[in-house]
Amino acid sequence: MFTIGLAAHYSGRDHNPKEVPASHPNLTYRANYHFTAPDKWKNDPQRPIYFDGAYHYYYLYNRDYPTGNGTEWRHATSVDLVHWTDEGVAIPKYTNPNGDPWSGSVIVDETGTAGFGKGALVAIVTQPSAGSGQQEQYLWYSTDRGQTFTAYSSRPVLPNPGTPDFRDPKIIWDDFSRKWIMTLAEGTKIGFYESPNLKDWHYTSGFVTENIGLVECPDLYRMRADDGTYKWVLGVSANGKSSGKPNTYAYWTGDFDGKAFHPDLQEPLWLDYGYDWYGAVTFEDGISRDQTSHRYALAWMNNWDYAHNTPTLREGFNGMDSIVRQIELKPVGDGTYHLVSQPLEALSQMADSTVSYQQIDVNGSETLPFTGNSYELDADITWSEIKNVGLRLRESSDKNRHVDVGVSVKGGYTYVNRAYTGHPDKSEENLESTAPFDVSKKKVHLKIFVDKTSVEVFIDDGTIVYSSLIFPELNDQGITLFSEGGTAIFRNIVIKPFYKTLLTS
Image 1 (cartoon, one colour):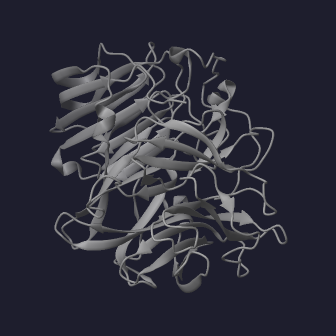
Image 2 (cartoon, rainbow, N blue to C red; image 1 turned 135 degrees about the vertical axis):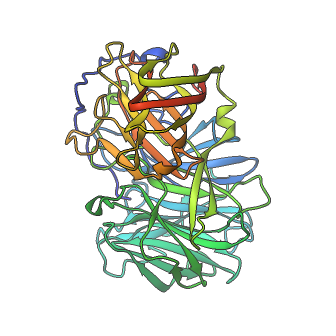
């Protein structure tokens, strides 16, 4: 993805955040359980890799934000994908003739194919060429287990063939063809390349996308569905707003023959229907022997339409990731396969306590006695004849401010609506996100993760997921159940609050 621009000023609907000290956990917009930039700026995640008993995560960071430009790769580690430790900058910016490093991917070269020794870490990274400014792919390597990287050459390992957009390489090892495979974002096309040694790359094919704008951060991996079927998955960060689709992670299932990808369907599916799940990466479970039954995913919780509009700037940082989710491939029943998402059980286990309500019948609204700004909430909802049902979260004491999560039974869709609370979209065009839903079932299960500045919603075991930024007043902490046009029954309501931060510096 592109390097970042300079900052804009925050603006949001009916919201004027006070400056608050970052040192007090109850008076800060810093998330309790989401990964956030330690200071300044972060955007694109780079695919985490597992070695030496931990996940190693690199991400684009700008130490000079908001007055200076350019990104570098900062490093963090985790043993459980919940608690993170900062490891500092691994690839500094402006240390070679080709400027700052943008997105790419890092792999463990177990057999030493690149010539840097067995177990060396090799990163293929987009940088703007010193000569032309064109986006080209450069190799960096690490022989100290990922703490620092060295530029292999000032010349690219994959030069630009003459296209304006030529970035975000994703590298995998293909066991079938016994070679390295690169996917690359090339405007509206995804290019495929092969190499025996990570230095010499050969173009094999291209997959052309339609009606989703410029694609970024491509992703390619093989998964086994729970019916035993194997599928390759090709994913990209894309913008489907022109056709009423999300601006998040689009994907196709299909077959990859070592040179080209053949989709099952031409139209993409979407892994998230919210506004803020971009630059996503998926990665292997480093502990499990089974690398195809499931994998993990995380994304940058932001959107380039309003990337610099956040009250966290007053605390000296701008940048947060989604929670890590587990993804699996499921047969739909019509011969197609979809990815489903679930939050990590390790995160739920970190909650400080549990509050539960067995059954509440709602015709109108019912406010729960629980209040909080950082929690997990589960609920089952059933109905007979109603128009609309859901929850108002992060609600103000006067009931005027809230973010709504629910089901429009009359409209046949689920939704997350942030129009009535602080939010980052100055244009006020991206307020309610929706996804089609089979309301004839007359039931829904909601699993919702609320943090200081975010809401992530997993519907019916993750068949639909929403990830969106919100900027409520810090003291807006209420929860109200609502039903319009009839009675809805809320059962098995379980709330698990997170009172302390799970992140370490």
